[in-house]
Length: 345
Image (cartoon, rainbow, N blue to C red; front, side, top):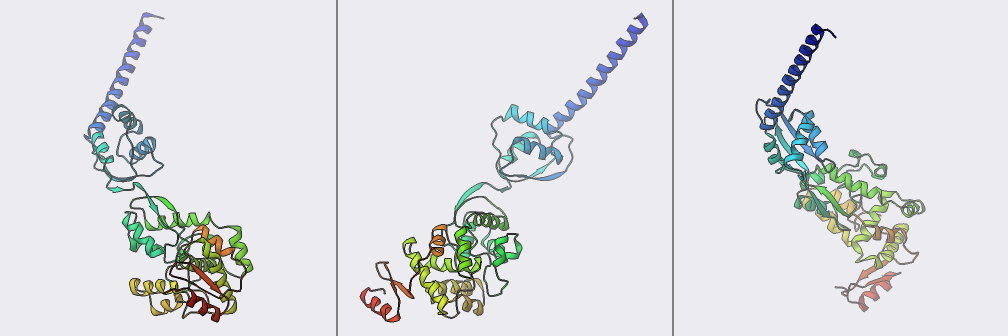
């Protein structure tokens, strides 16, 4: 290589190094400004952190929405300064001119918390009671929950196809709100809460339920309605099977169910939740024929199993005495005699 060529190569290397240094300086300065929240835009963004989001996902969201200049810069800074940082579910109102310390402080204090809480929905709870549970636990408002329970057509589940489109039904999703303990985020939209409960219900449909419907010429919705009345009448599983047999016998003979528990549900709908007298009459089984217009609570697996596996009996009547023991009778005369024998009120 000639002396002139060596000089040219050296000059080229110097230029490359100088340019690289300049570019590196610009990038470094940009990152430093970003870390310090200087010379940034006034862009705004609502960061939503879910249970599936960790540092990588948060970094990507911040970078993609212009809150930080690069996901790797933010992630690297966090690894150095807050290596054990825990991200909390929620919504965070961000702006691009926040320093990284500002962002960390914000991430410790969500504007809308979605912290996961456990909510226990007991067996036999109705939609109105569940709505209060959700509000008390900060999940969603009771009114929003009940609004989300009004129409089955708002949801895409095959098992909801058996719900009649009737104005006489108070809450069409009653009976499908499976009782269980749920992990739900604070401030979750009511429809998402309902969908979580519907998902759980779908996992508990059994072959016995399908068989019962086929053998008794019932829809799934009618089965849930029957089970809900059994749920409210029975003090436990031990009495549920015979109670179910009584109601099945009365339905088969065209005799009114005359279940007191339907009165209380109908009264709540009319007096506390603004439903009409017609809706009241459609649920109160001393007035309506056959089953009430819809379920009056949400049954658990045990009561559902007792309902679909009810024994074949000739029982047409039952009552519980003051000791909460149930007595069953085949005739009205036998029923009256049993009530004399076992004080019940």
